[in-house]
Each structure stands twice: as structure tokens, then as C-alpha cells.
Length: 183
Image 1: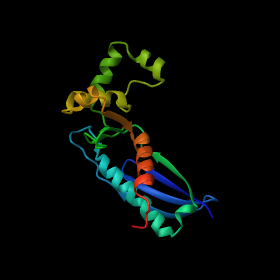
Image 2: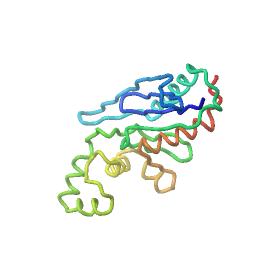
Image 3: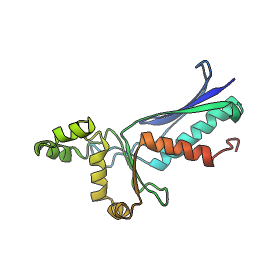
Image 4: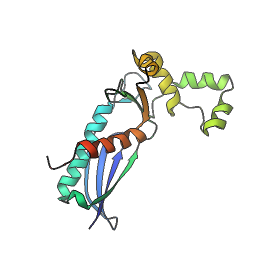
């Protein structure tokens, strides 16, 4: 029988579910991670903790199932989407906590963009509304407020990902560097 490993990187926990080829869940593993609230309206996550918990639940689900890795035909990823993770391409390390999709710290910048008439341009070019939910103003905030971020950008080393693409990077790294899972 063949299996699919689903990685669910949610807002409050990481989960892994192993499904058989008929879509029947075989095993589930889940771990919560910290919610960080530096100020009212601000919500952050530790990107390394996201990686650690996602890797741990994937290993746990596979270990608990006792399947052979050759029977794993795919890995699917679902996640919290617009949480923004900024990291150094050279070191692979996050340069700050992830700013979660719920975070409202950039609401003033979004209001300013609306007041100067940028909302129609943003919608025309991206199909999105101007809102702190999305990553652009989060990146702007990090560049202005995180020491060293602008320099990393200038040097071509700054990378910005939502958890969607970060989860893909994590899954790729995990498959490439973390197998075998029996350890």
C-alpha cells in the first residue's frame, strides 16, 4: 500500500497526518507552539519552533505507522498562508520572529496607502486589498525596524517567505537532510 503524509502548519500547532491510498487516516501527530504577543495587536511565532514542531510531528507520524519510507508517495502541505518569515539566505536563519497573519502592527501604513490612493493600484497589480493581513507592509515594517534587515536586502541575502513557501522549503530540507527518520 502507498501513503501520503499531510503536513498542516497551522496558526497554533503543527500536525502531520498519514493517509493510505484510499484516503483513510492512519496516524496523527500534533504539537502546539508558542504564541508571542509583544504588544496589543501584535502576534508573532518563532520560525525555528515552527520548523522544529513540523519536523517532529512528521517523524512521529511515520514512526507510529511503521511504514517503509519507500511506501510514501507524496507529501502535501497546508498552512497559515500570510504569516511572514524573513531569513538570511546565507545562514538559513530567520532574522526575526515570524509576523503572523493576525498581526495588526501595519494597520497605520495600510491606512496611509489608502489615503494616498494606492488601493486601486495595489488591487490592479496584485488582485489584493490593502490590509495588514498581507506580507508587503510586514516586510516594510521589518526593513525599518529590524537591525541589519536593510543591509541584508542590499547585499542580496534577505529572503521573505510566507509560511506557505517556508513550509515547502522546510519539507524539501527535511526530505533532503533529515532522512532517515528512524533516528
